[in-house]
Length: 363
Image 1: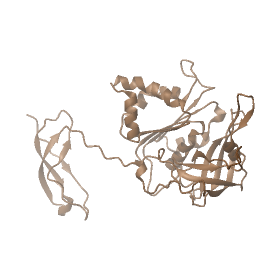
Image 2: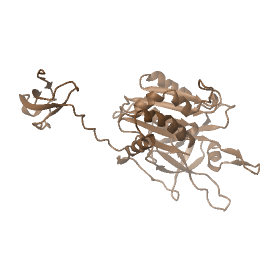
Image 3: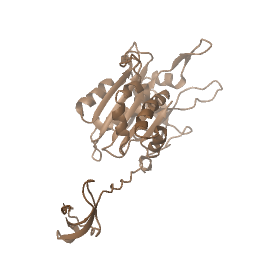
């Protein structure tokens, strides 16, 4: 016959406390025999009086805590400024952040908002470039992921930053084509005006749980929302927020001279080695053990088992931003791992999306 189990559970005293239910469920290891036992607790609503109740020791799993949707936050502003009535900001800073030998230029730019464009980490803004199109009409806006935290690079909540790659390519006729908005932005000089719309988007908002595991997968300028996340997590102090979970960043670029914000991320890793993991995938310079080019999915494959274990947890969130092709490569890694556990990966990924644990913004 199994021995009786006795437990003491203490609750803090509070004038707002109410009497506990006369029925309590304890979670016990599988080896404990199901039986009724006396349980003692301190009743906060009875001036510290110790009373006893009867409780059933069971092996039932505790009910999951209901998640709060990141999209239900009433403080998130969307579409305050629209194309017909944009906000006029000014360029405060515009600097190239890729090396001279990098395949293409990427610029980091900061615009003044005077606090009129309130945004959250993970949102985007629209930019309407100066001039008119071939039909004589004003250019249409282009959306860019915000690369700064909600308080901005200067910490005064009066700026917004972007990370923009200059688009230049040769078309089928052999003509050099320049992207209208990217070249407009990369050529901006401090003091120049810029027409801003938004902010927009809730898909890429950070999870509310400060103890979450956040896996960030970015290629090129897809790093923008993750820089905004990481600044909030590791470079700022907030009265109502302290990140205690795990942030794991995978950044894929073609060359080491294309690694964006590398020094910032390395400082974060030094500052919070237990909370931040950093992995680069440099496709033209690195290979795996098989001699294959190191794309972001190739780097992730080195941690496939660990990533799969994390993805089975209820508080792991994946964010993907950048080139569309990387999602297919990641699916290929996960299909076989999920199958080992008898799980259909594509079906499981759909459930993650529904739970806001799989967030994608690709182009």
